[in-house]
Length: 428
Ligand code: HSE
Image (cartoon, rainbow, N blue to C red):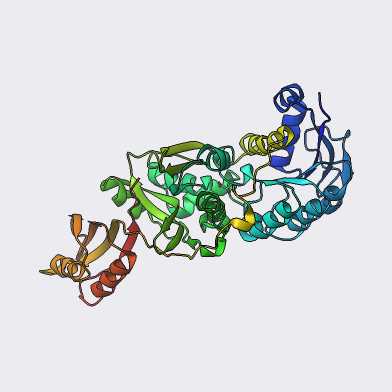
């Protein structure tokens, strides 16, 4: 058998310990599949004394992840420290400068600095792999980079933050308010240290930016992702969307349009009977659409020790086997800089508002939609509570600009009793 592949593992949190466990428990299997043993030479973490439930005595120790990255006795630097700057970035740069390949789970770092790091790696003949950065245990990077390499990708969409999906499904299934579902997710340890990463759509936006780069051969550009979190979704939105046959998801959508690359991470309605509509709890789902392969649906655990460590190991095994892929599926210096297009693709929209009980109130709203060139697909008015009544409207396909024009028009009618809520309906 060939020489062992020697790893330096930086970060011994949940995922790092998961990687150590797989390497310790499956040494034979990994060696058989890779054609060479996979070993850990040294590790690095914040505290040396902490009991992590796995034996670490056989490994060297470095306090500084960059020192680990530079060691002569490692071939691959496994970065599981996290953070879009600081020690993780410095250590990856040190690893590349010292001639190592890199495996990372760090979506934030790659979403912000992926282009430069990929160029740095590829110029020097090294690889950066990041299966664990997107949708945990779901092998979506491999599916896009390798499985769909012969396709023009038409659209990538999905639920890529399990915490948000947990909160939204608990609101719907248990009738909880957003605040109560958030507190429950917090109690279960689902939330990131900075919860806005989850509920603000930032974590999922990082993942979408990485998928879009591979799918469309463009430079990763997180700043161009249109972001909207789930904090303003109410139980009424969820109930009334359900009444019209939809469920609300924090949905990421990336597609190339004639006007540029559209990347959105925002609450959307999807048909309740669609695979995305049926996604429950803290699970992830990514849908890939290729011109030849058609629609591929991948579903699985988007976080957690086993799933994320499994994804890290798939990259390590690739390197052990001698598979050398460009970071984003094609040489980084050939990735195009895409023009960002905001909400360019027309879609049906769901509108919810309270109207006052006056003759012709509904007609005034319908007239504003007509003037903005928007056609109504379905409409429902509920019974009056005192002097106002909730009204739901599903439009035919329209642009966000036309919808905003209509909503500005609603405000001139004198019949609105609440600020209208507009949510895009994603056709899946
Ligand atoms: N916090 C993320 C989630 C997992 O809830 O899906 C890490 O990206």
